[in-house]
Length: 149
Image 1 (tube, rainbow, N blue to C red):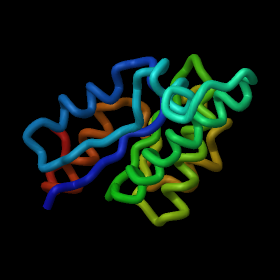
Image 2: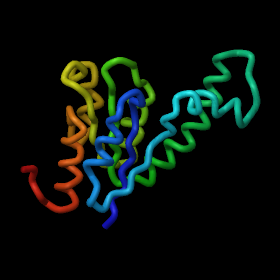
Image 3: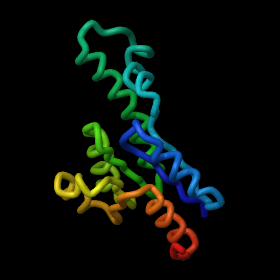
């Protein structure tokens, strides 16, 4: 059984690569949003035309990105949403809520400093991890029943 995992959220660190590398050998297919920040920001105007107003520039990009994100989350068996330390990821909160509303198995990934701020998001998750390797261990357990170590 191939497990489809959507990796959503923070794009400024290598957490996705850590999970993908750690899951080598497992029957897992990964998907994610576009992580090239400039491409993600500018996709709407690049495809649909320029905007003089920054609000509409960002709005077009958000809507085009939402098509990809909604499809990825809808197709996933498990959605992992990462909240990073430096930036506010409001889109990650939306992705977590959307995944939960669709009944997807949700894993939230963040450091302990966000535990209070994300308590409602965490409450929707089936697991809350602090490190990418914990996500890998969850995936391994789900697929094989093997515990770490």
